[in-house]
Image 1 (cartoon, one colour):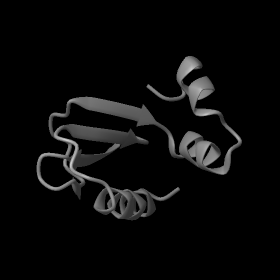
Image 2 (cartoon, helix red, strand yellow; image 1 turned 90 degrees about the vertical axis):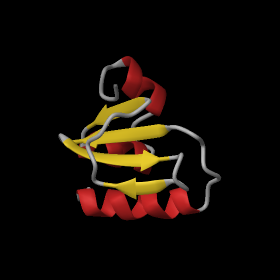
Image 3 (spheres, one colour; image 1 turned 120 degrees about the horizontal axis):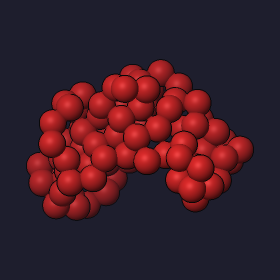
Length: 81
């Protein structure tokens, strides 16, 4: 999955959610996307500090999205950190 596609999908989801009052960073294939829940869920390519960082590969992300990889198993096997 292309990082720009991930960014677009996160922007759509974040715009539909209430601000959550924290910063969440996704690192996918060493590329960062930051959601700032203090600022109306602003989504950017910033690699700043975050309250929580989720790291995975685009391959694992696609498998979770399609249902071929259970998210809990992904965490337990180290595919998501």
